[in-house]
Image: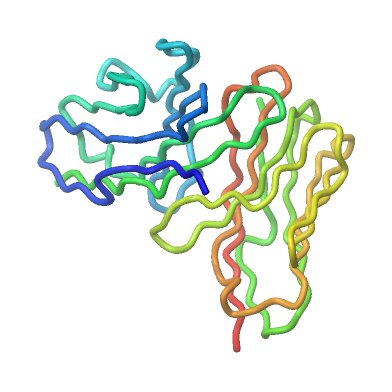
Length: 114
Length: 113
């Protein structure tokens, strides 16, 4: 069964460092997303991406964040100059289309900023 | 602004019980609703998608219903098993903006042998 895969599963980084979280969405999907979940809090939307550009971003997704689809398979989230409060589980998701289509999620990357 | 609430926050039941998890949303103009399962420290597994034109969906021992007019969805789990222990999350796509899911905080379920 097709699935969304994320790497690494866990990343520890020092405050101020840059991290890149990687995702391989389901191959025929067109819409890609990043969400995050701070421990004990709700899952929050960060950004949606379609046709090689950002279609929507939340207030959280400031200049510190960027996304890229460098080739036909990978979808990355870059966090520049990480802060302690960036520590969270980051989830990648993909959908075949908008409308009544299911969102499929990866297993997440746990980011710990120390 | 859409708000999603899940009740109860935690639930502990003996094995074999049938149980109901509740999800409510403040704006009834949703596109669809998805139920997810999350094991501790793990990813989000999609359980059921209820499309806007549907009132319920079933998968095995799981049945989810949707009442858009009242802003409610329920997830019914029949004959619960210890392996069902997890957090169950519901999330909605708004009709006006179907690009992002709005999430509840989840119900943490423990099924005791």
